[in-house]
Length: 87
Image 1 (cartoon, rainbow, N blue to C red):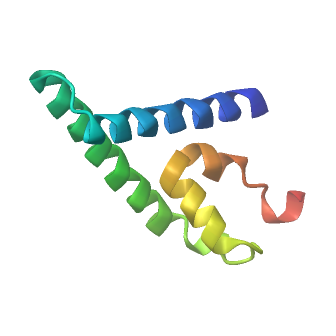
Image 2 (spheres, rainbow, N blue to C red):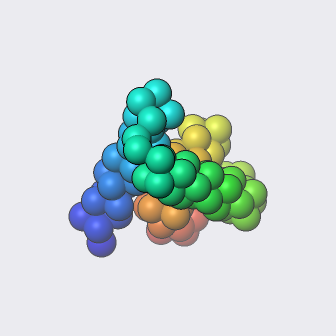
């Protein structure tokens, strides 16, 4: 399971690099709009995940760093957080 979560995190970060690259060097027109739309959709989904899982981060020592990682990698980071009783 750790391998799948790690791979998901890496692929999500690569996607964000594609979105940033597209902002600074826009791709041809139809691809440009699709990348931007996918980036906006994923960012809004990750913001919802931060809001939804905010209560589960209360006992964590680095809550703001966890929130930043959820904004970056989404559910892959949420699933990698150990349960409170299973540290």
